[in-house]
Image (cartoon, rainbow, N blue to C red):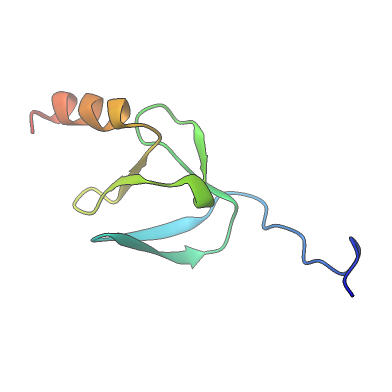
Length: 73
């Protein structure tokens, strides 16, 4: 039986991630990535939006639209 002292602590710090089509690969372990638009931390378990071409993460659909407007896509 495991107790609270037997669990592996969660990874701390910013992760380095390779964004793929429909998935991502963790290059350097960490707990979060930063939104390319807002600079807010995004926990890896909540990461839903990213650009494969730009290799950027986004915190919300609004952040994706903002980036597209900024770059003229």
